[in-house]
Amino acid sequence: MSSLAIRLPFPLPRWRYPALMGIGILTLPLMLALAASIGDMPVSFTNAGKAILNGLGLTSWDLPQIEEGIVWQYRMSRALMAACSGGGLALCGLVLQAILRNPLAEPYLLGISAGASLGAVCVMLLGIGGSTLGVSSGAFIGACAAFVLIMLITRGMTESPSRILLAGIAGTQLFNALTAYVVSTSANAEQSRSVMFWLLGSLSGVRWPDAMLALGVTLAGLLVILAFAHALDTFTFGDEVSTTLGIPVTLVRIVLLLTCALVTAIMVSTIGAVGFVGLVIPHVTRMLCGPGHRRSIPLTFLIGSHFMILADIVSRTLITHQVLPIGVVTALVGAPAFVVMLYRSREKRR
Image (cartoon, rainbow, N blue to C red; front, side):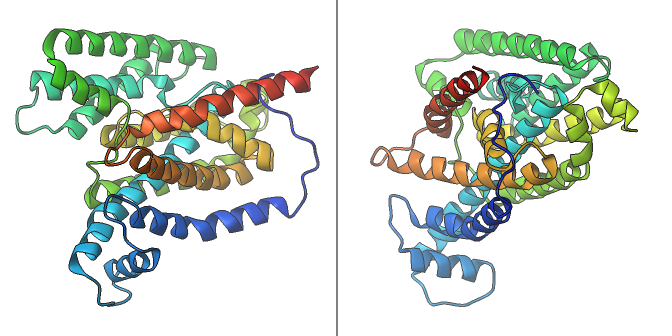
């Protein structure tokens, strides 16, 4: 992909990938239950598990009504949203790094996050949409508008990967500038704080309709991406090689970019912009299982889900009785991790 990508000592042990997948699949429900048990009102892990089973309609344990309501109605939907957003953003990062052949590509590269931020700010500060549009709806419209603009600039994504990359950067800067202008001219101190909290990402307002929408979109995106795993492998070697192997390069690129745009738009419009997940997790996955996408796609989803759940737990427990924006936690972990990967890639080139 480029000299930044970390090279692996091959061959990898045959047992590593099945072991990682098995651990990831088995521990994901446990992570969800753990996240549902942690908060200002502690709930035992056992009771949290029982409340989840009751909510799924599998059991009818007799539990305190308050505990069961907190676990199922609030914390479980939040934990599921964290898993979906982490897995979805990590998958989008993996796809974009492959089709754009750039290890620095991430889900927000196409201006989607910046467009969502502008849409949310317009609803929050300018009252655009009145009572018919909420912050999430405004953010989704902004994200879609940003992606349409990038598509127009790149002639329906038929340009070369480098031109798509540059168009995404230009669009991101434009929407960020417009967002800064609206905030600086229309917001008071309290509104500025609310906007900043949203821009850094928050799961506080997530409820079951949001979580179920995210689950459906993420699983659909996962299936689409898995269907193009072989094409993603060929993109690593360039468009000419892909065409020689019978891959309809332009069509595949458009389908995958649209998929990534939809998944990213849904996540950003619901929880705000959470950075470093789509950038770092794909590199971690390739370190563990190699570059083949048939293996790295499901493992990337699992690692991203686990990472976001842990980040949400930390954001709620790091400071007593205060919730940090989840983007702060992901950046505090992701930035040092990426620096380490940069250092390791430099050492391997020597």
